[in-house]
Length: 128
Image (tube, rainbow, N blue to C red; front, top):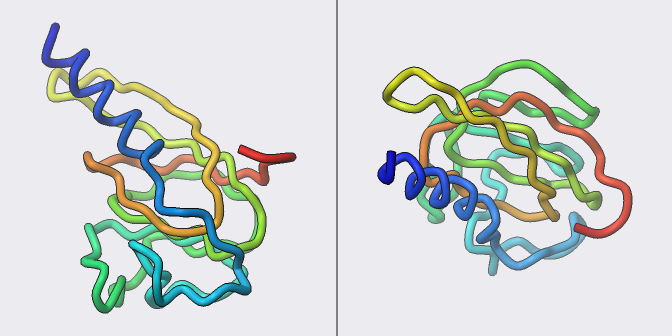
């Protein structure tokens, strides 16, 4: 049970340790996780960990410019919009149980430290 508690803390912290916020209009060359093939004005999710150079080139498991719900595998994401996003995701533990999370994501990119399933993208009103 202690291992599950530690992994839960790592999973939650993984999304909270985000790259510095940038606007969608700003240059992304200095971002820790650049947008790769994510189109400006969209929120993208990739099923793999993308190395920062040259950034994700694989096909995203999700690319949306609207609010979305569903189920896609995720290890890397990029908010290439000018809005904050409430990102819903879940992690399935080795024992088969599932934990659900929602975090506010500023414009920019990041990775999940564990493989997760993204379940929703909603516009966040106000600052994160």
